[in-house]
Image (cartoon, rainbow, N blue to C red):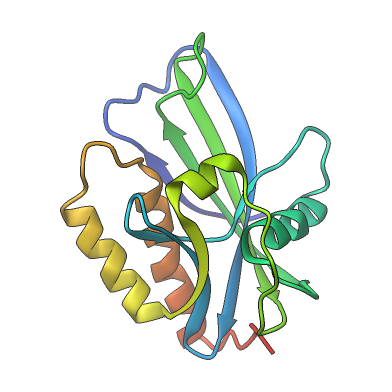
Length: 179
């Protein structure tokens, strides 16, 4: 396993009671297009994936998340890319820090996406899967980062960093994605 990057959000101490969360996320390229989730509430793009259930196999969790969020079929997990660590404000009371480790995998899916089965908060936030040019996604997220409203979460920093990393992968010849 390779540590790609560590993010510590402003004002977060690394001391105290830590809540740990493991997540899996997919990098799915089709030429220069990348499959991302657009969130209307925040007007940003993020990688499909999410938290693992207790005892869940990471590959099974990734396939589950991809089906739920994007409707992707025939998910092929090509390779493990690495992980990104975050120290964030806690989501649960009784904790001082949320430590989240996001594992990224290079995947391939069918080009056509099927029906999604999003969670209630994903529906409320207006999350929809979109194929988008990777440069356009980076430019969009960077613009949003510059004008980030107070109600917006902190995930966009992780997502934008990984989009740049994925662009470097693409430049280095990563040629997997939708069929």
